[in-house]
Image (tube, rainbow, N blue to C red):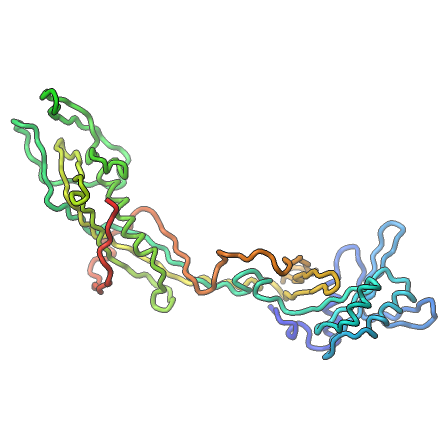
Length: 374
C-alpha cells in the first residue's frame, strides 16, 4: 500500500491518471487528455474532463493537473477561467502537488475555481496514533499460593463436649452452600440459642467485603493482583512471553481493632492476622496493525479555496475511490488516545492452577508487602 504521493505518482502522466481515477464513479463520465473546441473555434486541451447529466441538464468540470516543481501561478488560473468561458463548463478545478501563489488564490476565489493540493496524510489524519498501530497487551490472572492464618483462636460453648476442629477447609468457587446449626449463649439472658450459618460464614464487620472467608480471600487476592497490574512496565523488551510474580498480601485484623470472626465446623473462629501469598501470571504479546493494509493508496486532498480536506483512498477489492471528509484543524484534542509502544492491561477473574508456579526459581522483587485495607 502507498501512502506517499511520490510512490503513487512518479511523473506528470501518472498524476493525470491518478486524478482521473479518483473522480471515477457511478453516473459520471471521466476522460483524460481531451481536446475540445469552444466558442472561439480554438482547440483546448483538457487534462481531465468530468461530465454528468441529470434530466435535461448536463454539467461539465474541467480539471488541470499541475505536477510541477513550482507552485500554481495566477496565469494558470486565468487560463483555466478562459477555458471555462470558451467551453461553457460548469466548474474549473486545478490539482497540484506543491500549492499555489497568493495571487492565484485570490483570482480562483473570485472566479469560483477550486485549487486542490494532493499530499501525504499526516499521522493525525490517519487517526491517532497514526497509520501504524503498535502496542503491547498484558493479560493478568491470579492464584493463591498459600494462606497463613496466624494465632487463630476458637470459641466453644462453656461445658460443651463437642470435638475441637483445628483446621479450616476452604472451597473456592462453591455454588451450593449448605447450612449448619450453630449453638451459642446469649450474652444477656445466658440461654442457649441456635442459628443457621453456611460454612466459613463471616460474622464480624468484615462480612461487608465477603459473606464467607473464601469470598473475602478472593477479594484480598485481587489486591495482590492489582498491585502488579497498576505498575507500568514492559517485560523483556516487549517479547511475547509469560512471566509469574509473587506478592504477599497482609491482613492484620487485630491491629485494626477487630479480629476476623468465622463460623467453621460449628465453631466460632477468631483470626487476628492472615498472610497470603498471591501468584500473578502475565501473558504478554505485541499487537500490530497497519491501517493501510487493505488499501492500494490513501492520500489527502486539501481544498485550498473551501478550506476542506478529504482523505482519498482505494481498497484492494474496490473499483472506485472513496472520499472521506477529515476533521478541520483545531478540533478538540483526544486526551486519552492510544500511544504507540504503550501497554494495555487486561485483568481476568478466577484463578489459574498454582502448580504452574511450582519449581520456578524465585528472584527478589524489591517491594514492600502489600497491605490489604482489611
